[in-house]
Image (cartoon, rainbow, N blue to C red):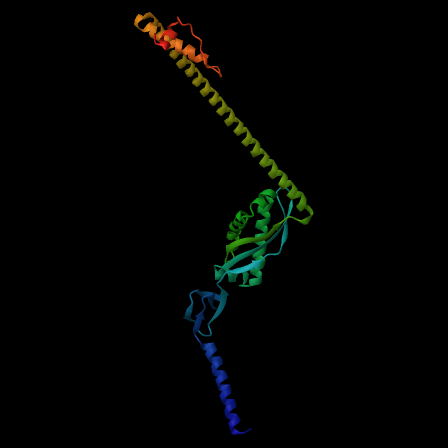
Length: 293
């Protein structure tokens, strides 16, 4: 082996040793934005770095462990539950969660993602089973708009927080009926909805009839009052008319005029149809007036 090769090998070994020494003795710790960095001393966590940036550790004595600091999604195994009214339903859900306490997460689950998913699945399934078993099937179906998911999410937050886990949401991908009883359940639901609709229709018809009857009664009362008032006015007018005639006939200065007016009225009443011919006695007062005598 020539001297050049020997020098090259020595330099390479020196560089490797220096890198190893630098790695061992390097006190610098760089924390990313999406992670917690746990500084451990003799296996015990002495500090948690949760802010992105550099920090220092004691070489040899202290070590570091990285734990995720972002939201994660865990799919749960589809399972079958029994409702309050003893009906079977199939649930298929997922959980959105993150690590809120990295030290507790390390202590309880050894910072193991698989263990965390198993614990999440068990607690969520237990909560879902309890909630669905105390709810009738129809109520569960009517709560698919998110109310059921909110109940389960609120229920699992506290027990999972004991493992340093924060649950943001338990969402249901599928909450369905077993194929064996889908048709019967749907038929029963349709029948119940039709009965409710018929009940509302009947109540509406009843209210409509009440309003119509009240309206008809009001109209009849109004018409009766109007007719009575009209008869009263008519009677008053006729009484005034008769009084005027009586006064006129009792007044000699007006009696001839009113007799003449009444004669004209009688003459007008006789002119009906195509017959426009009037035959008068030449000695009658009207004939004398019309002839100018």
